[in-house]
Image (tube, rainbow, N blue to C red; front, side, top):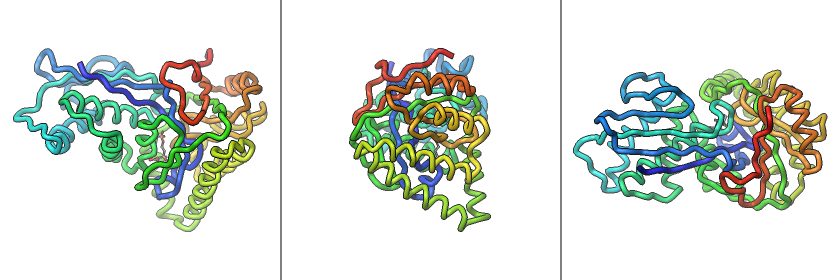
Length: 332
Ligand code: PMV
């Protein structure tokens, strides 16, 4: 058996604008991991399994199955990418590909990017090839374009990073040194977020109202640059303000919803330094930047405001490895 892993992410500032070339700030969530294992198939059939979905999915059986993107990834890597590394196969070997993931699906935490990174790493490793992370990132980003239609690559860059990033598509991500360690409370709204759909909707809005959307993106881009500086300088008050401003700009884009707004307002009312939605939006998660002394009060306020779960993400220059207790699941 060959096994490979990757982890979740949160976007601190800059989602959506990052798809159009502006910078964004992200933080890896190494204690929410996914693992993909690859085995030779016992029965000659290629099958896909995931702990999130019952049963096994036979290759070619259902194009709209949630794991169908893994089948496309497998076919592409076997026919086009692995041969570049000297893996030339006369026939496609039947494989069993299993996904185990702690990352909530459709929650803006980068679940599909983490699965693509882990599956790409695992498939290469299965054939004895170990490309550097930047190559895994390039391949997983190309595959993600198929899943999300258009993608900045921020999710896969963060899924291979163990430190906060300032990211702009097409440039090497800049690792951020964290001036003062801080906490983000990640609250799940319980509503699914459909990244592909929301990204497409923003693209259509941009076609209809290019000047309005360009102005919003430019503001988001500027505040992401300031957020990177605030993180490096340890200026958490400034970072909180920037998160609040980012949330109102995302609201202007129409990607918030009453459930996310409730979490944002409840967090701030309970003493968070700033709050915003994170990821594509219209569901998924909100983030609250919280001083250590206010963690319990804000966590309780988020649960009272309808969060189905709250994670405490402790952010330092190198985030804490998977399984460490810095990111805990709160009691529902
Ligand atoms: O919803 P998520 O976790 O897939 O994040 C999407 C982030 C976007 O900026 C909306 C899209 C992208 O490709 O960066």
